[in-house]
Length: 282
Image (cartoon, rainbow, N blue to C red; front, side, top):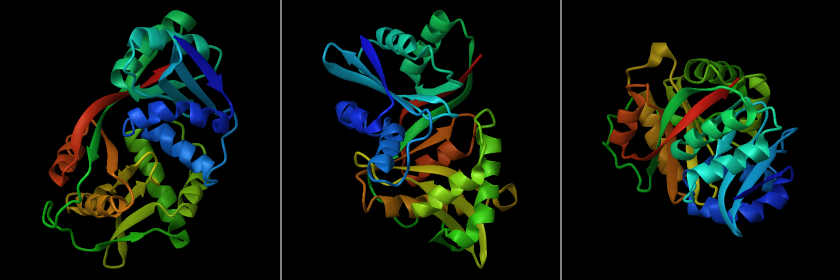
């Protein structure tokens, strides 16, 4: 196994195409980031790195690191320990803060990372990956009062506050350095949505552009005072049907420690297809 690190996404993209197409749902995070760069919706971040693992001449895994966030690793059909050792050797010199990725390879990588660098690791979050390929029929979940609308510039302050609250609640170990800049970028891509009841926003949802035939829902956030009224289920259902106009599949992640989100997504019609973990280093 040989892992090669790239700093040029335009050079990396054609080499990674086979892996991204082989695992279009589980690889949607790097695929959507690449899509944004290649279509001029996002500039590469300073220090951004891409990694490709070859078994002989066959691409078998990909990774992406966008500082200051975690390294993201794809699934692999190759032998996970060999892939993990190749990745750890190639990435050991980088100041990676942590890892997010498909559970089998991610767990093997954590062991290889400690062996290679001496750094301890700690799993901080376990998630389940879901997908749906058919529109959500009317009545699948109780219809909440209100309707979905696309967020815009007048919503900026609300969006920044809610995205920060989501981050603090769901991913407290992940950095959140400039929420306003990130939110403005998302607004420019017109992929943030709100559920409104009357004239008041009740729930927030993000949606990626299609990449390798897949859109990804996330984040989904309802402030505590608005929970229990069906807003999240209604917004996810409406956004899913909107996304399926342009994509073959819609995907999302759910925190396994959250007793509400996974069952809700399954009632909507999402089906689980695998697990992922998040871990920190040092």
